[in-house]
Length: 432
Image (cartoon, rainbow, N blue to C red; front, side, top):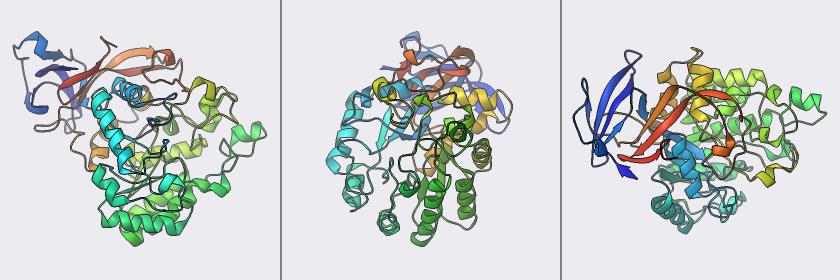
């Protein structure tokens, strides 16, 4: 990783004017020490990264990823996962605990932090810890010890907490420690054995589908429990109209509830699924066009706070089992920004600032991180993006160990060119 003292000729989004403006960034001790207007400074080439008129943004933050490490390294590990994140412009990522062993002890939290620091390509990795031991929903983990070890919140992501009393106890304990509860909302009694949503694709193929209520029931239940306990409650990967409505209502009465949405739930519906290709199988499943419009509106009006990828790598062999038997999930780091920039910003639906904020400033604010902004004194965690470059998604070039994506061949704009963490270049397309 090469440290730089200046990033010159970057175009920074001015939130007030709504314009891109050329600036030069001086970096000192890993922090932004100066934001210079006018001519680029005359400095040594080896200490300079020239953005060459491309977008310079705060580094992206992804608060929902699966690194599969420990236990599932054939899918991904901290090394390949952070390499993929850096190639997607992400400087901070938060990894989920559904590993083997589950991240439910201080020792496993320490393993994640140590490996990320030593081998994680410079990307900052923030581990979540499990709500319940081994994610079985029977006994709470030691929240205090996990917080002390470095966990940033508690979640059983991958499975929903089925018992309301267990969730209320978890919220009460998390609130006493000033920690958030992050919830995968899914009622198992409504989804067992199912693999696509109720909708046109399921009907056309004679498949019983997963109903929207499977997600929304838990959202509604947990919003009431969050109101009772006062905890910060965060809803994972919102995908249904009903969930958006319930989150909006909860926010309107003062519940400390936040939420996230994934790129694939913003750009795809179940009607886009071409066939029984398991690269279109994810959890939550792709919903109806009406649900897609609802989550877009929810993001636009602030009901949904941020964008995450739910980066979920699986091996080619696993995905080759077909739609019914393959595991849920797609990779997301390396296509996230180009997908959303092409779909929403280039078409004029969103401003560039809107998209950037929901991938940087907003997640940092929601989770109390010191990154996510490009201002004096902030960490020099930055991303350079070529907004004019168009190229096709080629899964064979992914830095991830896996390439399970439905977006292969899509022609997109807005590809990251370099990623900087703490003033050091951790990835560049020139050296990729």
